[in-house]
Length: 330
Ligand code: NDP
Image 1 (cartoon, protein in one colour):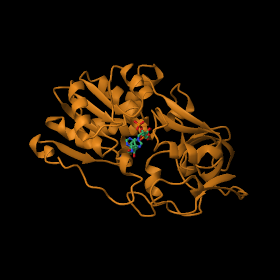
Image 2 (spheres, protein in one colour):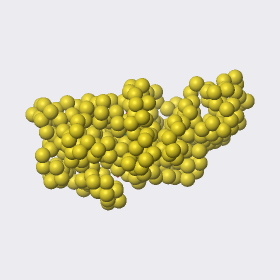
Image 3 (cartoon, helix red, strand yellow):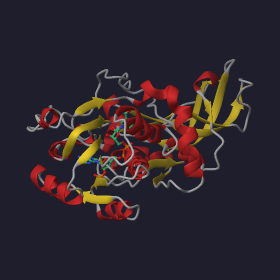
């Protein structure tokens, strides 16, 4: 089996040299264990948090030990009768080509007619995150005007489509022309944050949606948050999903100077971690699965080829090189 480790906890943007590829001989399978040949690996922004060496809502990665992450693969050898050879499974033994895990840590793939890798994106953790943030945290209502930052990424691209279906004005913030085009083609008003300070971004958002927003789905932080606060309607709800603009910062930077807008607009701001809501995953699948299968909801993916490229795929998340879900195909 070949697997990646990190040899240090990075300061700032991680360097490519941080990641090391190792090889090991796997022991023979123990009772209840399963060997999986991975076909798709997920790289996600939250993994940066696990590289900071401190416990947050999840333990940090161990130095020089196999990294972990969501993956999909096929069982090639099994000592768990629930997962016979040939079964396709999802599990957390990513960043490697062959995983060996107790059967209890595997999930069979749901049965929708979608490509396997959809269960790492639109019908996996990122999709569930978009659905949870809008419905369970922001309590989105029919006709709500919704603003989404990071709008063309894995989470954001489903968030804008779920919001669109509610009938209000939906505005997405993203960083490149192809992403803005993708959003506009789906009826989302697209605004670039690049080269804009908070005042300029505020102006662009006001132009896109003069009445203001009932819901802000926060993926980015920084100037996006500051501008969004200026454009809230009374009673707005902010679902704080992520703040990727800050993940590579060494020292905490100042928060938005206009936080008083929460008071002025009687708004609510609430953070959430999708794993706390995982009991609702079947409900999410039941609602969103058929729409993905039927093509009413679409999704994009950006694919890097080969295990060796996994760190590059991960680092590209912070350059905005992905449209939709960033994946590695083995
Ligand atoms: P994405 O697919 O959205 O990829 C990351 C994107 O973030 C990039 O494509 C880029 O898009 C944007 N970005 C990167 N750096 C910056 C920056 N400095 N300023 C502004 N934008 C930046 O990732 P995910 O969909 O997987 O995750 C989106 C967010 O959701 C993240 O913040 C993540 O941490 C969070 N998350 C939270 C979960 C939870 O349980 N709370 C679960 C899953 C994700 P662009 O070109 O537009 O800049």
